[in-house]
Image 1 (spheres, rainbow, N blue to C red):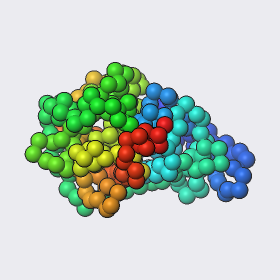
Image 2 (image 1 turned 180 degrees about the horizontal axis):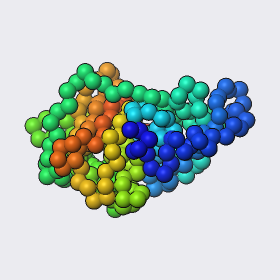
Image 3 (image 1 turned 120 degrees about the vertical axis):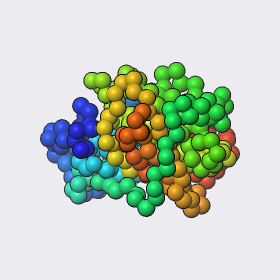
Length: 278
């Protein structure tokens, strides 16, 4: 299934054109299997890539239905990074001599039932009630959930009515994030990313960044299709939150699923957070 959901930058094509080059000094790595380049407009924090777009782009280099991506450092924008085989079925992303991300075949958690999805109308209402709408903060310019991004995806989550630990967001697939009439594979990951933000952290104004994301894309939705992305928090351990998200279509059919690990920044003072993210 994984190969059929990829777009023109499929993992199969990347591996088919793999080329061996000189390994990074001091490291043992496999062949170079491609490159990672995140356009400047696809930001999460103002000077770094949106975690979902980055993770989805990296996941295309792993041939598996479910892929786990670990973001070890913020992914830079508008910079070409090397993607190399990890010689174990996964991929490693290098920025010069530094590893910034790793990807491998993954598995979604199955020990928590998926809650019933809110309706698209309820998702629209939740977006309108987003608690930080109109507030400038380190993630307010995010291409996925930023409320003021005219060129964004507008997948802005709000609280599910009657719940303090569930979020929901609407997504209408825009042609700007599609290819050949279907949402790009990284865009599906991105649409799962922001709504998987921990509900409690959103309620308290706590800034978190995506650390690990595992996703399975059943299909790439069509341009103009109305989708609902809803999430729930499975557990919290100190600054670490474990969440899950599901994307469903108008008929309630599952389009994609994800599990995510979010980590709250140690220093939550606004000025310090802004400096760290720049």
